[in-house]
Length: 208
Image (cartoon, rainbow, N blue to C red; front, side, top):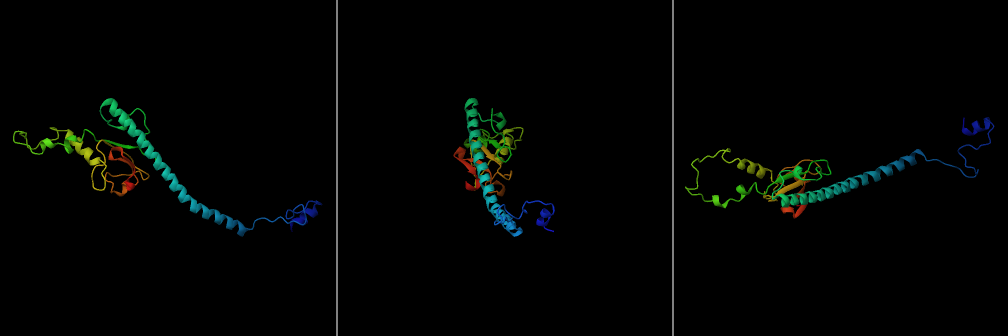
């Protein structure tokens, strides 16, 4: 039974839904094949656009992390000028953004002053018998700063030649993967956004 018969049975003068008000014009809906073609086109456009969208979204986060690092760097420098020393941690700063665009805390390592005795100590290059202490095997209790210096040296960010990239302080984001290792050659470090060359460079490790 079609719709036309139902309309006529109830005595309605309304035309069936398959007709327009003009009897010479037919109103035709989409067929299943046409709908599937449209869905396929939309799916194809989505597959093309989504990776580009995610790429540009990640670029935006990288740019924001670079901006954050520059702001924190200026705050550290102001603290250094005001107090005469670098902050021990970022929590010493009055106001800063503690997390990067991926939700991970920014990483900071104080270098200046702590490593001076390890990296630069020319007076110890040729010690004389007079300069040598009676105990030839000093313990950590005799010089606890050596443990601190060794710890800092082990955490310092290093370039592809294993040379420290900063002499004042390290400041960086763990990047999208939230992982990192000290050397720039490590796979986990490639997406890190780092401060290097004492602030002359801020950007991705793999572009350094």
